[in-house]
Length: 274
Image (cartoon, rainbow, N blue to C red; front, top):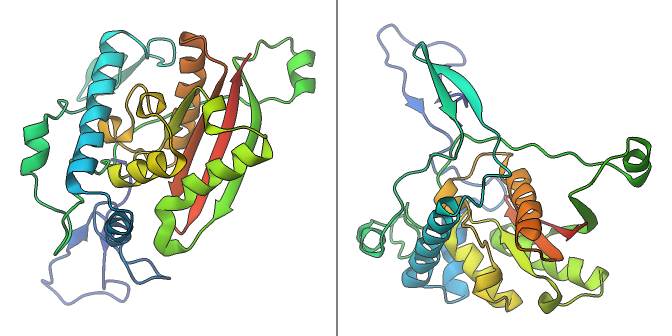
């Protein structure tokens, strides 16, 4: 995210001498959606109120994400999926061998944070994922390539779905994608061992677990974007990669990764341990 450009307005045809340029971080800024006229934060707040999610619910989910990440990090759960590399920063060689996140939050820290939007009661910086730098890589191959190159797959893609919902209900995209995926595979929520549900906003993840009636202990077992941050275009690959390794580490059979995306999209993928 640190390589994303800044935004400068009203300079397309030049400016008057001495006029200061005002730079905006358009990732952080609340920009209205072109279809609904609402910011993403406002749509999330509205959806949370619609489904009865409170500030306390969202803060508790965020806290658990941090605690799960801390426990997983201390038990070296990420060791098999993180590749170390050396980078040069200010002419110094630095070894990057683990995710670097802020100090895990405490319950009292979360409760003191101000809300993000005017007249809002739920969204804060504590129960909303932060934009961060990140990268993930995974290799997909069909059965012919696997046999031809004598590969040893870590997991099998058993199915996937993409859905669309009302843009104002964008946070429900992942829910409907999971339901459609389970129906197509003739499975129930109970047939799936663990879930990775994107934590763009804690309230959306709370809604997903409630609507799908998923046991909280099976959701984001090592924390999620609320603890790690949300790197643009890398979160989905990170969730899928982590899900594969968690299935193997815990000796489980099935896992689903799902995300609600801007504009009313929802995607889900079913993975099975080989």
